[in-house]
Image (tube, rainbow, N blue to C red):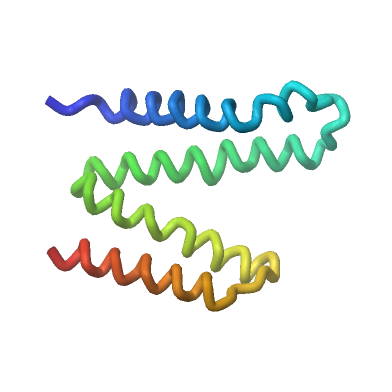
Length: 115
């Protein structure tokens, strides 16, 4: 019997937050919350609401309509999409390392999709 998807995602967040907390707790404790600019808070809210929530909702939607393995394989495209958007919208540069990494991602996705 498989675990419910909500349980899996919840535990992924629990273990992920434990790892983040282990690395960054000192910085969090030293943070002066009142000194954080409004733009930073708005940016954080945006990241939580839109990219994170929408990405998980779309992944859940896709898992229900296809195979979890196929959805997991396609999530490897997220860095490619994020980098492309950063290049277009923010003027970030893309070098040979990024192009090589993207090529490996696409090759792995093609390999998984073939079988």
